[in-house]
Length: 358
Length: 273
Ligand SMILES: Nc1ncnc2c1ncn2[C@@H]1O[C@H](COP(=O)(O)OP(=O)(O)OP(=O)(O)O)[C@@H](O)[C@H]1O
Ligand SMILES: [Mg+2]
Image (cartoon, rainbow over all chains, first blue to last red; front, side):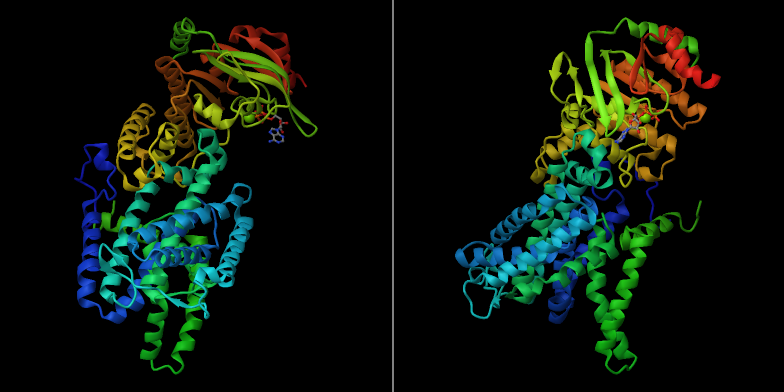
């Protein structure tokens, strides 16, 4: 009986409405936050922070965005990379046009611009579903990348098309570019991801989230209750793209330090989609589990194979990675659409009854 | 609940029946070559329980779909509170207090009972997206206020124990009850119930009859009820519309329609064949 709700009575709806209703869950979250905010910066090497934690956090944010659209609102999208690129280029244009602008403002504006683009490409969802919508968003992916590649204005007429992200400050502290330390970049991204995760949790458990899920589960009944499919679907596209746009901007500014369209190709769209399938559709926790899994799997395989003394471990690892991912995706799609997050929940239920199952 | 009690209830209710709330006139509805409704007219008065009966395929469900704007009839008019509408729309219906349940349950399967019922309050919520993201201001206030309202419905329908269960996992009878709860959360003036007791066992049926009567009496909600169980219809409805092959066969009190020779033929004719 490590984990249980017995004895934790809620005496008001406000208490029952709290994000984490169990004391154990709240303690768990505090521990994770303490590790992320305190232990990591102190203990983790620069290599860990910059090549594992940063992409993990940013992928988790993009997954959060896609999960809102696909997991909660039921609208499939293969345009994640295109929306991330939109955020990256919007942030670049804003940061260079207004050098004094606080980077937080740049991020929010880049997110809003991406939200607008997302609404435009979400319009077909009012007419088409499933496979056809997937194809339409795929078109968005290719069109947007083509646009940023083709029109020199987006790269400020740079010859190579690859541009480095300039240093920008948030509240007076440099958080991007060469002048920012890896730890600062990590902490900045962590704060952004924490705040946006909290906002996503709130939206998905309140009215707007319920209207997304209602449209996902049964659009006819949703309409008869008074939910407008137009508002519900387009708000999902807007919020989702807002998140993906900010993820793209962070990718370019905080992680790679380079703004280039190629970084957001179709492979990124699929990778984020795999994250939410493996992590769990329609869950918040699943985004972190999925992102961690997909970021860590190749590293783990590499090290494991090297440890076994395998020659050509790198090539072998990437084959294995593809096979494992493929198998897992099929497994989760067929057996457990709620992914790793659901497996975690089942484990918690087991713990609740342990050691006296009833 | 005994039949006598129900009749007494019907008698007390009948006194509170008011003006015409909804009227349909000369409704024509066709699907390709199939005529689902032909020249159907009747009205519904405030506070009454109005039954629609008829054999399978008579057009009963189609009639409810016309009333809440889900099907657009090729001909005829709908008046709501004396106002003639060129066409009814689902959103207009929802906003004006017309709620319904479906013959083949239309719940949001992936959501919990509580969330399903909370969707019934969506039209009453005003908080902006930003307030919801921050769970602040109106978002917080509304959530708690509507939660309290929904909890009253949960108590009323005795479904406290399944509050946090995803509805897809519930047995059929309970799903029907949750669907009623979601409709009630809209605080409807007119409640459209499409075979709310179909497929239920006797005990569940009795509960459902009690809930419908309670809703009608305590909140004054007007009810249109499609039901195949004649004893239920005769017991709780004030007036009955009989449809057959898309046409209006009879319209009157339960006693009147049950004595109508055409109704007897439509129902009993099958037996004689
Ligand atoms: N969406 C639709 N498309 C085509 N035909 C339809 C549609 N809806 C209803 N119909 C047809 O209209 C007629 C009336 O159907 P409806 O469902 O209204 O009957 P009902 O009285 O509710 O029957 P039941 O007692 O079996 O529920 C049937 O012939 C049916 O096939
Ligand atoms: Mg029917």
